[in-house]
Amino acid sequence: MNDDELWAAIDTQRARTADLLATLTADDWAHRSLCEGWTVRDVAGHLTLQQMTLGAALRLALKHPGIHSMNWIIQASGRDQAALPTERIIGEIRGMIGSRRHNFGVTARETLIDIVVHGQDIAIPIGRSLTVPPHVAATAATRVWECRGSRMSRVFKPLPYDGLRLVADDIDWSVGDGPELRGPMLSLLLLLTGRRVVLPQLDGPGAEVLHGV
Image (cartoon, rainbow, N blue to C red; front, side, top):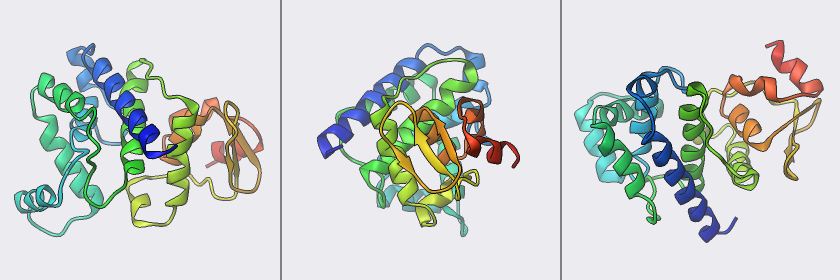
């Protein structure tokens, strides 16, 4: 995907996520998400922070003094935003559509991963559907795979997929070597970011390896 296609995909997923959030009940907002320790509201609050500048990050550090990890900063900032009124959370996500700003220290591909994966974190546990085209999920998954072992990868708790060959069955995409693990591209992306809920959607010899973990 070129830059125009990448940002168009981000905008589409932001719009779809905002539209979904606008239909949720109070119980839905309070429901546990796929993101460990976060409710749907916490995840939605986090998604309002896809354009954090260096200055904003420094202000957050001052608000929560001490030495903290990247994961701690993500948790604290998401919960701060989750305290906002529901309509404001939705409005802030929708208000980013058309902008190409992204968080300090990351690329637009991390922005894509964030909106796609967290959109599923919201939708799946409350029994809703949020469409992601296979080529969009493939772009996000490729970036996750490239960042294995880097600072960026520390925000995930991935399953032990090293030693497996991941193969999509709805697009020409594969990575890794070893017993084959096959399934929809979106499910493979969610696997790469540690979401065990997708395991029933995957098959092949590699699935038996993961089910035994």
